[in-house]
Image (tube, rainbow, N blue to C red):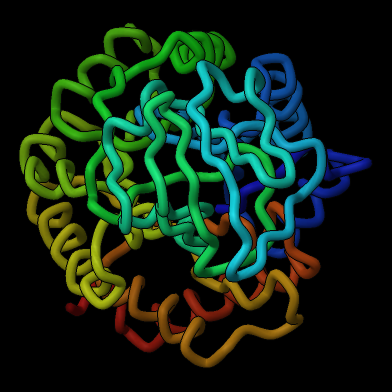
Length: 336
């Protein structure tokens, strides 16, 4: 399955057709970067290309993201910046010297010396001052290019108390159900109650509801979540900011093991072939990661930035498909 950013495609149907021909059997749209109208257009384009293609929409869920920025912001180690809470992704734009985070009272959950991680941890800022007015002052310790609506996490592992389903999420879920989407993957599921909250909005629509596993609370309540959801999606990006990176392989294996034991499908996503955003060939480690996922019994692999913003989306899909087929032909599927 491949993530597609419709706003980056001058000819969406042509892009979907090329990815389908390269081996993609489904497409994902990220509601955090879409509107209900653009989602409907995306679904229509997918159905026009091939009605058999799976379509997945993931919600924003109770996660923190940066606000909209007029242009990508280049942050270098040592740069100082303000970090401010914003009531919505559009209310407090992210500009040079000022990063907006769409959550209330962020200052209540951080302390001086702690880090705030952006874009799945690719960028990190150390808090140097928590001001009485709620403004944070921070020093960039790991730089990079920060775009709009990128994920935000706290190095402490604390997750501010956000509702399981926001009003925006509810709007997308109802629209997706009306459009007959195949899978809804709810982000930052913390408990079985979060899954039930989404299912109540889906109603009787024949949609599979997947819980995205990307925080510590989800791991603590994993069995109950598996029982309530139709499947799981191991979202390694945010999970890698909630846990030490060295723990991700063993956590992925355990989630896959429990899904198999319960007879529930599982998807693995994030940085599967990350180098192919800029390179026409993957690293050997990335190819091995794909094969390992097959050995662990993954039912689907989901490409994210590789196809949403990468320079070689079709080559990436084709390489992943060849690796999956080669691993399965060797009789190695679900052997771990």
